Image: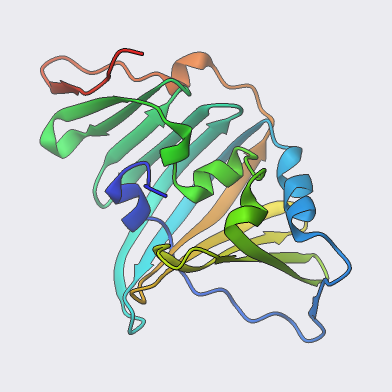
Length: 218
């Protein structure tokens, strides 16, 4: 699956998940995909501050970023890296804008939901084909749900994807690449189902920047 941009995939967030508390158990009696769908299904909009870490295979910290995220189903997604390298990725479900202030450039493309980063697809509640592409397991403890997605395709770039909820709130998404690198998003200050304006998911290029319009006609 091709990420929204190479940066979004590579710069996603990482911090190793803590071990489960004693007594955590595999939820063998539950359908993990149905459980995940139930946790995500109650979200129509979601805003969060995101701490993003990238760890090298030996565990060293490669990069730490601060991100602002806004999501509105079915197609609105706003992902703004604030620090250390400002970048904005935003889509209204039809068009994708990737604005890099340091380059004074915005790239505009047709939005293809099949090219979205898996995390963005899951946050949008797109779990329909999950069981066909991943072996999904669920581990629970008091107030904790951890979903582990093991890719079935041998050429997947991921060795494992972990999604963790505390209560009903999203806490961590972790991507383990086959090269040993880890990417993790940790979510803070979550607010769900607050109204969001259409304009949030449309980018108006500021004057004087380079516009690279790669959209193709339908």
